[in-house]
Length: 287
Image 1 (cartoon, rainbow, N blue to C red):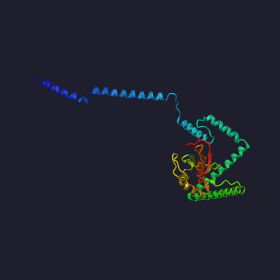
Image 2: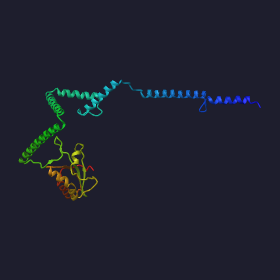
Image 3: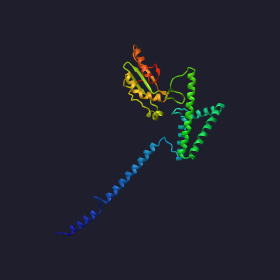
Image 4: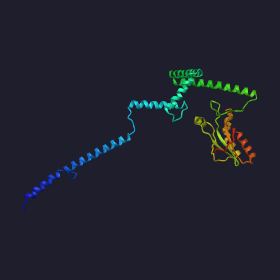
């Protein structure tokens, strides 16, 4: 048997195995690498075209120009509220409002108001500068002291005018506990008088949440019907608080009793008046 050929075949097999990677020949590996590179190039081109389609109809803006546009938009947003402009008001509409304001400020009355406003701003800046120069605790103490003087003066002025009204026979009872600076009363509850009893729903004011947390507020469920005695018992702590602070909380009262239940209506109304001042609303009950 000739063993020379079989010896050469073994060497060929060894050389063949040395030219393979992961079971592939070097040529096959090269073709695979080229195929992957082609896939990557095609994927990159697809991403570029996708971005190009997304940018259709858009204008490329330099960073500095974009910042200027954002600042202008922020300024317009700040102007909308003091000018009472609509949220969707355009820049031209806001410019027209500003021009109208300039025309008003050009009048003698407008100039006087502008001078008063500038004087108030100067005073505020002066106070701010003084606070910045002083230590925090000392400045805070002075501010509290100044505020206490102002409150005491306003309280004295209010009592003076109340005494004048009482002497003239025009007294209006206790002060409202919750009132805006312009004199508008803020009501505490909607109260509905029904054939079965009294229902209540609380008004909520964001600017009074902290103050509300300090009050003995009763638990209120608009669907719960209270008897007169339950109503008085539930609202007793709040009523005592109003007595201690020399004021009265106001409520809005709705009549949901039947046409033949006027005596019941009067009885329920007197119950509410025992703890609150009221404003009668002739419309339908809101809840």
